[in-house]
Length: 495
Image (cartoon, rainbow, N blue to C red; front, side, top):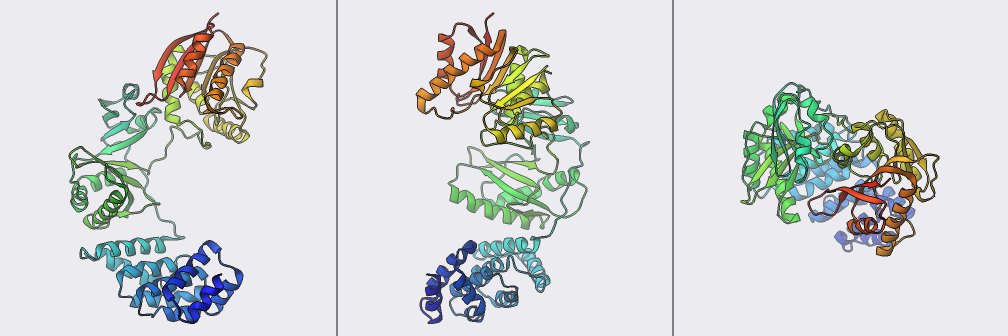
């Protein structure tokens, strides 16, 4: 089929349509060998189309040439890029050059980037200039290591928020030492000059820094100007000693529709670069900070900053995870809520352990005796073993089904994140059977006065089993999310 498009092109038929079809054929190597050979041997024909009167023909000819992967096309593409007058086409030449050896034109591309970064585009030009700048940076950076900033401002004073969700911000606030705290709706505001201990607190979701401006305009350019005039650059300089621009992404939490939000983000990010004198450069992949704009009810934004320049050590052990893995900060919160019911030196079992996060967090807050983890997913067990080694914990992980597991002595505790379902069991009947079988098996493995710490989104099935099985008593129940979908049940087996 691809050869037919090529033959039609040679006859001068529907140039734009056939180029687009050829481009699609060649996408990710999809074109057949005969087509690829024909195009590579006759790239002079495609080069001629780079001078066609139709800019969209020029654009698609360039992209097809780029997909052929021939370094000898670099000069042709670069010359066409230089003479191109239509701004909306220029970034496509740069996309065509990606993956080719651009050493012969790198300096010229670098000079073009400097020119554009110093240029103040007219409103009708801004979108296309922004696209060209983005493509130039991506092309020039490819294959080159950029020196990253490293956080060093551990002794400075910061105003920050630890996000937690609405239910248990106090649990996180109680762990803050050496700082002033204020409880917020979904977190804890902290003013501190001792940030290292803050970074070790396991129960917050994100650490975000406040700026000295709390409300900025809802229009992209005015928001960018306010950010550039805030203490953002001063704050980043205080945190890091190395030179060079900071690369950022923009995160927008807003009621705007997706396309509106995307348009706002692109315009605002470009305006931030201009307003900051390129000391802040936008990057959607290789970034060092996120500037987060959270929309208020009046349409203005609260700006916050999330850094990626310090190493996350509080869950440094968690090298491995699987799709069903619980978030480590949630596991840490579960362990802290359950702590009053835990026993030091306990023999504890997680029957659905995944990569072991629940057991590790349980042992971090209350040292256990022997810890066992079971799972039918072998990859998870191997990941759990490595995670435990990294955490410095001795935990026995076994690739086995809980429902056929036997052990020579009884356990003091069972702690687990209940699975969404058991293989082979479907629907409500399957879930009902899963919880029935769980309590049956748990009863045979627990000592009298033994505890179950169960994280589950099946409240009704849990309560049903507690009504049926009189040997178990519900000691405490915690809602674990604002919608009431997940609960932590603390259950005791009677003697």
